[in-house]
Length: 474
Image (cartoon, rainbow, N blue to C red):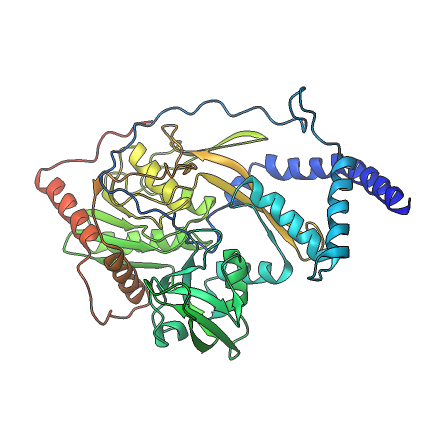
């Protein structure tokens, strides 16, 4: 009887708060500045899809997307009514009671609540997640460009498989210990990682400088049943520069952008100015393994190359549609541009590359991009103080109306105009040497960068033919 009374009280409280919560969220979504502050990045910046892209795949013809579905009323079809709030709370409490009474493992009510919330979020889409206080703190650290960890950029291709090393950051503890691209992180301090989220993995690896963490490593191609080799690492501050610029020859400039962070647009403009003063007539923008970041940064960078009022992206969510357009004429509207992309180019990278191509301002070179066409926003202190929910609030579309969102069959992403076949081994080596150079170091054994070389050939051929960029399409 007491349980029924409790459930009834909870249900009434939830219903009473529902309108207030909806108003708070609606105000956050409808705020014109909210979208530009939103995140467009996968977990921990780099999580490429599980299948290798097909470099020969043709570029799809952009099509205007269908109108977005009407906002849900919270009820299913009339033939199958949805649950009420009270029924939902009753069912959740019933299962929680069963777990507490019979499951051999113990868990607090807060732990069970967090698990239930996480399940509801990831059930909607893989990019909506619950940040527990410790995970939130680590996530915020990763956005500031320096953190205490071991220096690994990870990906998790399948939900029930261990994460894989995408890039070991040069001069980091992990790199010095011999961990290489393609290695699996099978365990962390003895805990199996197969069913951990990527955020959980990163949280466990990071910690205070000088503390130890023990990783169980399996090399690529090794027996998945064999015990992983154990490596103990000492955590250290890992500094991650975000941008590198250089002249590739007397006329071709190069900018490598690692992420769309708060200061990236200003750094990008400064790099453009330096390169222009050194004789730049064309530009390679390297967005390979750039997992995205802030919408505002993406729009500000695009503005360098577009005219005032040109569309960069359209976001469509429950609150309606919102367009992001440039505010001023860019200084570099006549610059010939090639953009390098690969399977690690995601979200903001795809917006920038897709917008420049849709407006006839750039040629895409490399391999198919990640394919993430949604926008997330952080809602702090939900469900309680110190927590946060990263929630998908909209889907975005490129200027000509196409979406890059990868579907359940693996279709999506940006297909390059000039496809370049690169083996997984060479791609890992190229990524590593890119980070060496990003950090101001010379790679010990440089390998030929086929995609970069092809981009330079393309820009030179355009210059020799006296070609100008295609007419801008509005």
